Image (cartoon, rainbow, N blue to C red; front, side, top):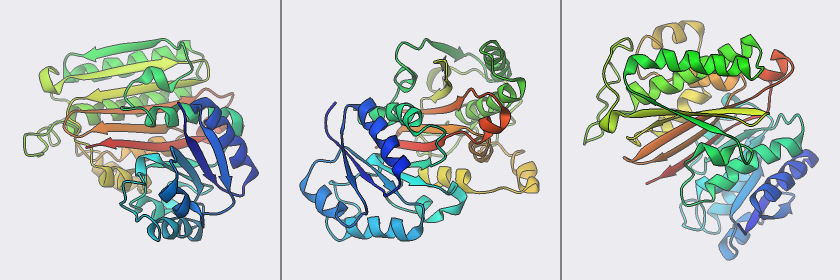
Length: 324
């Protein structure tokens, strides 16, 4: 793989992170202290991806203005799939990013080790630069064994979640960590089984179906789960064959802080999807890949840590890759 990774940041740790990302992707790193030249560069040069410090709205608006004043926000010279926002603040505090037409990826700058974090995230960036970013095997360390499970009926979900929990305990994740990850997998599978199915005009067909209802998962309703552990990170993906995920609604769910009452009420309704916000705040990272009306693959990542405090506060990100 070749091309340029453009870093826009004055933070030393970001340079270490971006250097590691570039090495993992096989890209050439170019660094800028601010966004004033970004528009000029993307208008005249080929930039494979950019990582930009957007911790404040002022920093983000500078990036947006530079692009708008040169090629325009919706130019074929710029793609949200290739822009990675860096922030020291969590997603609910940077609504200007969630609402941005440039939103593709969000990285929370809580590196334990920026080089190690860059190696991990570099595999995400590398996947986004391929023709299609599907496939769990490319998101973990090379040679990691991936297990595939095809669910046959909707009620098999709980068995799959329990199997994941047992797998994690055998991999030496603490019981509390294993429970958090199992809950995350439960959320992903519920979304794939009940939220994803739509008819020919895009109307959801199962989102109000009781989640205890049993029905076959075959044909277009087929759902599968993949899991891998590379010694540092465990990654679990849920796959459906509808490609119906809505980016705006997804980001609204993940970036909102829900009160206990809202969570209690809304999780009784299939399709709410608000558990994703809880997963992210519990230490999980997400990679959403969706090809419209073809396939959606949602992967959650967790790092095995020595303590639950480190587990909850680990490096994390939300990446989205949409194909139309």
